[in-house]
Image (cartoon, rainbow, N blue to C red; front, side):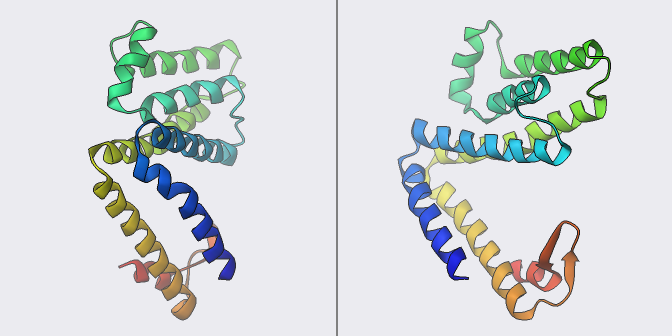
Length: 181
């Protein structure tokens, strides 16, 4: 417990100034967190971030995370009118890559990479966009996450007896899940 509190205080001390300041530093921090999340998802499937499919997935992730007001600037540099067209082009490159390497990477893995990029990218995109709308909105979102996480932890520690899904997260309990409510 003591370790959790110390870690939370250090993380908050590092993260909160970025949230308050916003703008480019916040966006870059969120982008870095998204890359870590995408790396973790790829690792679950045994796909290297530093492979051709991993890098193409990373490009999709970046295009999804960057704010709307950056999108036009980034995309226009490479000659397309929207992020969607660039994402579509990268998807085509991934599918072409499957054929070129004679199925050393499968369509299932390409689908996993794409869904992973969208799963991570869209969540972090909306964190950036929420901060761009105003500090109060992102603080509200963070408070909701922190309080529900704390509620689940403390209720689970105090009352938890029935495992929620031991194969996925062995210490989480049904009682802790109910503690979120």
